[in-house]
Image (cartoon, rainbow, N blue to C red; front, top):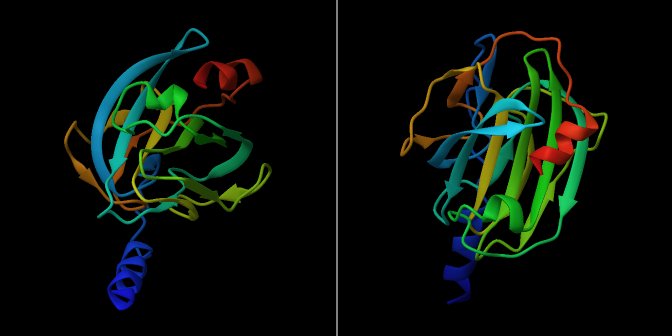
Length: 189
């Protein structure tokens, strides 16, 4: 039994190499999983698109940056460990909220814990720059990631699509000269 358990852990924490798309404006999936929600939300009076991706225990759990940019804020929020597929998990579950300033506008991504996920790992800090698809952390044992970006980006995925972290293009954004204000960051949370 110990060998079987050790084998499961090795398989679960696998970290395959991914080909990162070199498409201008591409916003890539931060995680492997299934797209469970695509919606337009209001952030400080501005429409933003939110894509939610559910990771089951069989998915790769390494998280990657959805775009190149500078990390302007990293905020850890304690919370519940409810089902990550539920709508309330985006607000009430334990999560790590990362804000990026990019040439395509502000992008926020959330690592959200689920029923089994009890540990969120994030390896970057405020002020770090990240490349599109760069490894930034992981969520252990099932979870969800949300990506929030300008609503005028051209969507490339649909509900129910299976995506791969770092390599699946979620949307194509247009260059902008907007940064995420403190008030906007509070609204996203």
